[in-house]
Image (tube, rainbow, N blue to C red; front, side, top):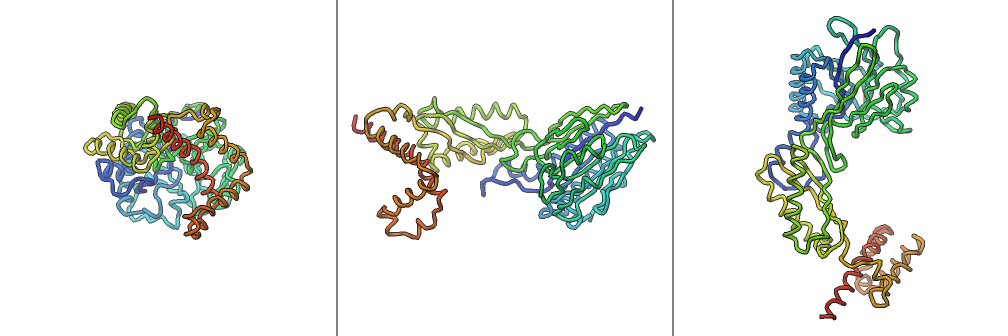
Length: 425
């Protein structure tokens, strides 16, 4: 029988890393919150470990980004490690591709309760709890930003080391990756009890026998990292049973917020609906949010949603309402997935100008991709504007022409439908 203990597994803190994909120049309560978010997230990690009386915190790489490895970031990190030490929590760290040995500047002394694993070889460090061996923690750090070697093959469990935990920053399954690639078989063959992984920003329990776990990052950094971010609180029973509990740590949450325009005929009504949904969203998350507003559905507001000026108006009107709120939902962008109020499928069947246009579009769209691009380029070359500026067309590649063609279905149909409506009046 072993020793009951618990630990917090986190990774990819990216302390001090700025958020990406935000609008330049926008100022509001989000400015300060965003600047502090990665630090606040790690503070929550330590809070979780202290409140749950965990014995250790495991950090599997990318504490910092080497490009934003400031003295202030180091001081903030060290302060939290000393706070963990005051609670009797040991901390184990491996470096990843964003904070390898060659970029690590340990200008601030860390408490003796912190162990940073070497990049020269796999080390084995005992985790002692109440004077007894609870586990042996194995780990190896990155020496440089790119590590093409399969570091997992360097791990070898020893006898009588209790519960065995291995720490590695790796792109598991990424054959040929420059981030210590390995396979699941490489990990399971070592007979470790728990693999604490880092590098992948989305949490994932890859295996439960043994446990192979990515906790994801502690704070989302851009629109690709939506939803809760955090760490795992891991409880290990005296007989080696493992129980994982995901704990949210993100100080600011990235979200997608889809809104259907179908029921609204004017922008003010749509804005009121978005603000209603935004209030519900803030109540749901209980924290500041950065959201991508995705407009969907079919209706008269399609034209406003499809135009850059219309989306800009919506964005500014919504963000102005959040200027003085502590719990905010800041919209970083508006994306248009709307369709015009006309029923294109129905109109294709009618024997009118719009029906002729849509049937001609369909016939052209059936061309093979290469031939379609050639036909579109030939049509464009015949346009008077392009004859005056042939250099402009030369800058357009096939994908640009095909994107323009796909937009033409809706834009052309909408214009023809408007002409029909004008004639009726």
